[in-house]
Length: 544
Image 1: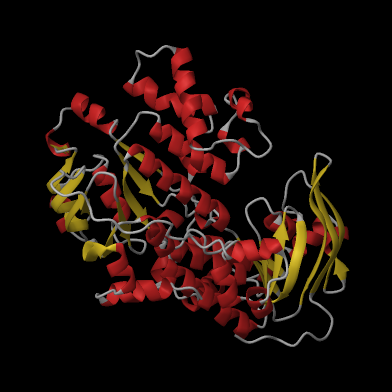
Image 2 (image 1 turned 135 degrees about the horizontal axis):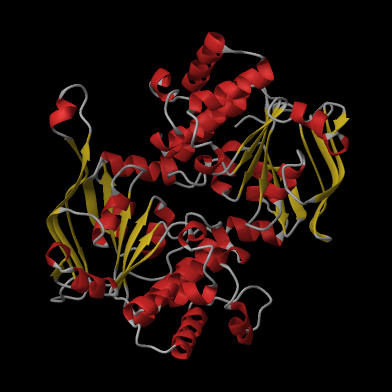
């Protein structure tokens, strides 16, 4: 990694930055600077103030009161009028946001959205704008850029959407790029590709990058310097090697040591016990349109999962790992009885395909799910009490409301759902509140309580920690392991994070292109991988 010399006037110099909401400070007078051509990582957990600090420089945070100075190119960004600031946004300073699916407009093609920037900032129109769009998409590594320019965001993969966001940010050739968690939703190999792409473009254009992230592995790979934030305070900053090899602050040391860890030893699976989940030659296929006249008379076929066999014993965890598009989430939906399939698929020795709707509903009490993003999987129109008690209203409607509430409170207590500063007795008072009022970790605990309240035997965990920062991730892993021991739960763990697989799984199944390319005990597969794809996947996930 190259480290630019620390000389000359900073491109961006922030002094005494304070951000407050409703009179309450959330960022407490921080100072940092970014030199031309430098890559600075602003690091911290959710709620540390890193995103608010960066976006407040361009006044992109609604209802925030911002004070201090932020000198950029001889001007104080915080003193500019709204009209003057519009000339800076997207032109001299561009942003890449965390989730491209929500940042991109679903009603316009990616080419139209990039062309809009070129028209507003560079005055290009018509053929010239389209040619530049294709050039930008090609520069970010999107295959078939002419065709992809006419695609809508939902028609692109996660990695392609993120590349389109980068192309849009680079359209105006900015001097500074604010990258807010640009790889959080991507699997390990795509994260590496996006970072390599950003690094290559940054060097070619000579622009500076302010990377906002909670992933220290990415910081070590990408950044020249790091600034660590905790609860709105900047607690440490300096060159990346110094921060990782000689961290000075206890919070920095805590972050560095927060990689998911394996806290149990291997034990043989119980012999002569029927698996709670069993599949043989499982195939899940989707119809696809065929080009030309053939599409009028018949449909094509895409096999998202092909010939998968697995056994999940009671009280064990089967980790399914693979990149985006490998078929692992389709396998999870099939295991929940939500997709038609070919081959054998049994839950609790009963075949999903042979069940009546009433019997299938009863079986779904035994097989529950915890989704990747608790913010989108929990209804914003329901209170905490309604969310956690929803399963009982379906599977135990005979229970009176006071008893449902009592069991809901017990489930919340068991998963440790107690927001910071709240006493255990306060849980009853928090039941009428909405899920958006709580942190990501508390929302994920709420999702676990919702699944646990109906006393299932199997939990399908679909990327249960990928939306969480590293310290909260370990807390949720510890919670799931404790619940597994106390309730004898079986987990089908779907993830692209090899660290989470190592921390939780007894058995591992590696999927690629809809097929299982390798499976076996976790220690064998992760420490002595045999298949070239597994070796490549583990190499991409290795500590950087």
